[in-house]
Length: 362
Image 1 (cartoon, rainbow, N blue to C red):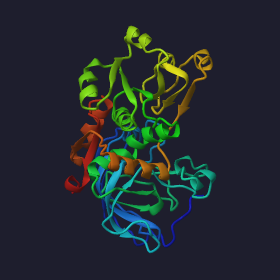
Image 2 (cartoon, rainbow, N blue to C red):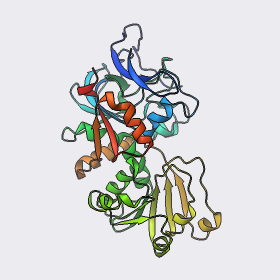
Image 3 (tube, rainbow, N blue to C red):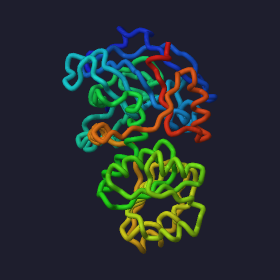
Image 4 (cartoon, helix red, strand yellow):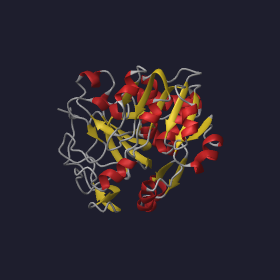
């Protein structure tokens, strides 16, 4: 069981939280008033200033997995300012800049929770929206004016790091950072390939360069080449359909991060790995196709990954602040959220939408 924060009571709550919610599988968002739980002894109440727009917002507002519980208030890349803390909170104070990512509760008792890998909790991970929380309520995300979260699942954002830039780190950023550090991709001089140049891919490029790697982007679209090389600082851009270019790079990569969610064969990319090279999947294609022989003969590894636990997430935020790594964002008002989700589906964003909650949610 997920542990319940003490002195939690829905009796003292009122419908003072303003959000935008989808009411059905059309996914259309509109204003919605609801209540948050009262601040428990271990809780932090956060005035949300910004929320990133993630493909997960499309998935659950449109019931793509068949498990949406309407009304759905999406958003799990949350940045804001602490407005109240419970009596037992020791890591945050009013006025602190904080972030909340894709999960807001876990059992806090299993081997993974005890190791700071809460996202892999074996008992009961509670996502930031569209999940049943300990008090029986359905969690509601960051397309809203404020949120109440147990302090363990809040992250400190340094004061000198812009809150708008911090929001996408909480899902897009950590999704690529976590496997990069786990597979020791932070070794200067090694070579990294990044498949796909969206919200996740562009962060993988930024981290790769900060780690001192030689970074190559693989994309289906030649139109992204100039920006990839100049704006993002990649060392090389390869159109993945160009067989000659691909063959010339055989057995030359230590690591590849695959952010693409469309079904694609992994064989052309596995053949680019050196002996004992690692390919990490962070996208969610409906299936993964590859030939075992191409894996076995080179002692190669395919690994999966999602976001990170609390320990590595805080480490990533601090790393971004120290190295001045910022996502490329398009800041939008909440009133543009429906159009933003449509554009996200069409991959028409460079490279992450961030909703300015503070100045537009009225």
